[in-house]
Amino acid sequence: MGKRILIVLFAVVVVAVFGAAVWLSLPVNRTNSLLDDLPTAPTTNPVSEDLFAEQLRTDPIAALQASIAAYDDRAHGFTAEFRKRERMGGKLADEEVIRVAMKDDPHSVLMLWQQGGGAGQGTLYVKGQNGGKMKVWMFRKLIQDVDPQGFVPKQSARYTIEEFGIEQSTKRTLRAWSAIRDAGQLKCEYLGRKVMAEAGGRECFVLKRTSPADMIDPFVTGGPAVEVTDKNRRDSFRTVTVYLDCETRLQVGTEQHRHDGELIASYWFRDVNLNPTFDADTFTTKSFK
Image 1 (tube, rainbow, N blue to C red):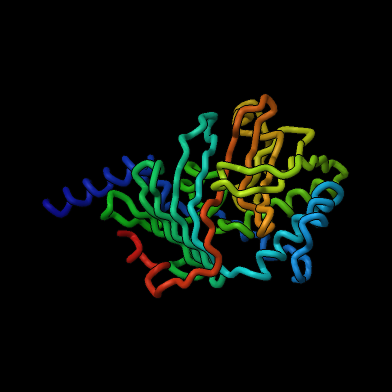
Image 2: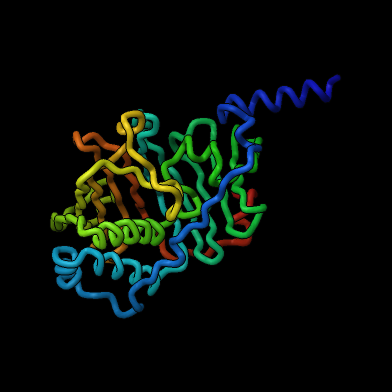
């Protein structure tokens, strides 16, 4: 009897945190990310600031390729403070402040919430481990296995942790913008250089794309296209503005705005430390403390 009570209490805790616990065990139709299939520019010496600015004005696709090449040339992982706000179900959430560690090979992500995030305090994902699931840390004690493309992540984020990272953000931008260019609908405006408080006071190149129609990105790159309807239009965006660090050329900020100017999402990397030395326990649940 006592054992049954403990099981029921555990289920109640999970429901309180995640919504409907039954969704955690349902089979998921998974989508393989297409980001790794995206060709990038050959790694070369970084282009000059003047040439990079000219690319942003005249050939934004080449500029995004140069940004990816700049990361490939110098980085294989990083730590940073990650700040995000996202509109979900028509409601713009409060800003979340997250300490993140990310390693490229294998793709590994550790997130520890400093502000926001609800009951969740940390997530851990390592490609090829834990049966493809991520670890979610709650209440400083409870650790739950969650499918990164399951119901719960899709209710709490607009993009999968499987594609998290500075380079991954630029690859996602490049893939989307390349498809729009091929359709003859790419409209970009280079807005010059600006010191961004959101990026920790870094000076950034600013590039804005305006879409002819409302858009919602798929949760996973290459996943089913999301049709914008009256039901989800409040979560759609019309413009995307990317911020590329003037010194490193890396995409440290992204903002999406609705047709009426309302913020849909913002993502900022601050205090970026490239190529830190990670200890053996960084990408394990021992970091949940």
